[in-house]
Length: 347
Image 1 (cartoon, rainbow, N blue to C red):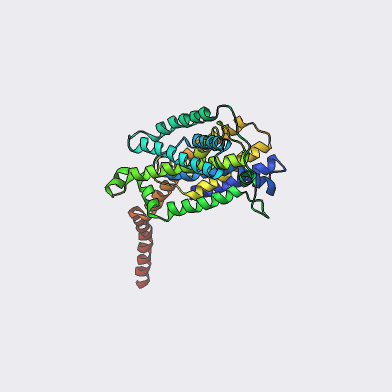
Image 2: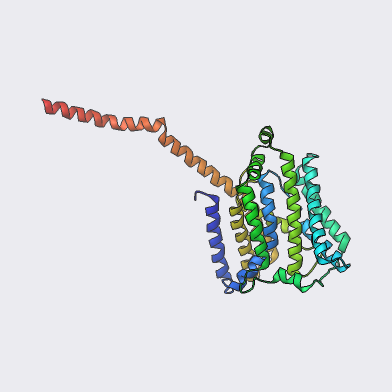
């Protein structure tokens, strides 16, 4: 394997084989439609998480922002606010949550791990303050149909269309734009990026705002899909989101990674959870499997990178001066033998 993405492709094929072995219902179009639909909130949050981790930071509060967005949407709708305005308010709140994270990291100089671990509890606590243990479920059908409906004539869920559009936008942003190159530069060496004229703090602040905005959008999708707004929605989703990003080959220390690898990782996690669910495996066991993948996602790329570096060093050694000397040593006896034959022939 010359790349981590190739190994991910193998893991995906093994996951599909495992799913087909565990349940006869796994390899069906209806199940794949359900599998894709179940991944959409995590998939949306993984897009912006990829950018943040490449930039050398992390956001553990995304699932709590999702839960807060779901609660605010349900609360405002149940109190008479038009659904369109309620969704706009929710997206604004998500962006403000991301702004709070970003300001604490860039202006106060606090570690993003600590900041977002704190806001993880803060935003989830606010959700319980707003809704308590109550729930709102009387959403209009035009809204819920987007959540669990499919594109007419297909089994493609509508949220998947939204994900594809955002994935294309973020892929172009990361891999085909100046901002994307700056994000990689910030993650590789932020001090060198500053000396190069890159506005490091502004880029990180923008990424945290985008993360909060997309997490709130995921909250809208989650609420539409389940037709339910509760304070405990998406509890624990941050584990899967971080695992998806790191398993996708994004360096935990920043500076490297790609969205195609994250998409492959997303499929692996989705297939694995779906297959174990069809086999009636408990959620706790599923979390153990995801945790194991998280450890693999940290160790695996480093092992592959070291193997590639070792192979490069061996190749360089073979092509270097030592290789040339060895070739000369091998050719010298042959030259001497040819000269001896030539002399004996003259005599």
